[in-house]
Structure formats: structure tokens, C-alpha cells
Length: 117
Image (cartoon, rainbow, N blue to C red; front, top):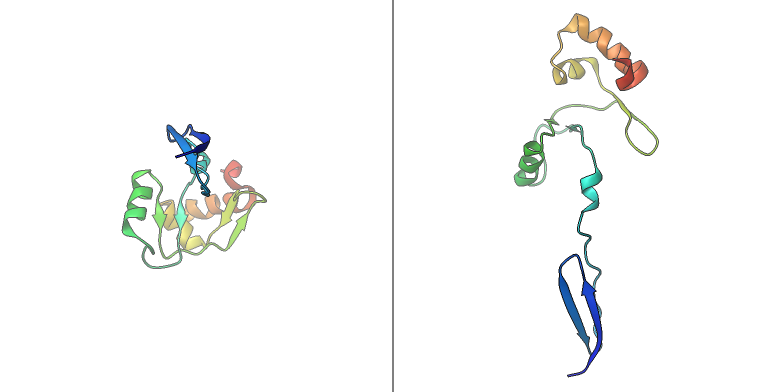
């Protein structure tokens, strides 16, 4: 057997001898890119979580709330979502606010985002 090349897969901790004509796939990094993502909440129009239950359970264990039966009227931001416009009734449910102070809070949120409250 002739070893024509040796590759080091540092992330996986392997030394890979290449023999013959073989194509290899790139490895994964030690730290997934998803670790740099910050998710405040998942807002879903559907009445129940779609996909696999186990994925929703993982998201909830990470402390990310999932709001079902909600509508996002508008997402604001260029490279990332900086602000959302929600229907008034849904916003008061999400943030557990009574209607009179909720109206003022939502008005400030819609006009200036997080900095407005």
C-alpha cells in the first residue's frame, strides 16, 4: 500500500493517510458558526411547532421562547432584524402587559425599537 499524502484533521483530532485516488469532504470547525447567533424569540404563524419536537425542546431549553399563532407585520433591519412590528393584541400577550400601559409601550417600540422603551 502506498500512502501518497497525509492530512491532519485538527478539529477531529485525526491524522488521515490518503492512498489511491479518493475524494475527501471538508471537515467541520471546532466551534460551529451557529454559536455566534443570538436568538431572542421564535415567532410562528402556525398553531403548533412544525418539524421535529426534539428541535423545539432544545430551543426552549436554551431559554428561547416560541410564540405560536402570531403574525409579524414588518421586520426592520439591513443585515439583521433590529425591530419587529407586531399586531397590538399579540404584542400585549407576548410581553404580558395590560392594555393601557401596553399601548404606550408598543407605540414607543414601533417608533424607536429597543432604545425607545
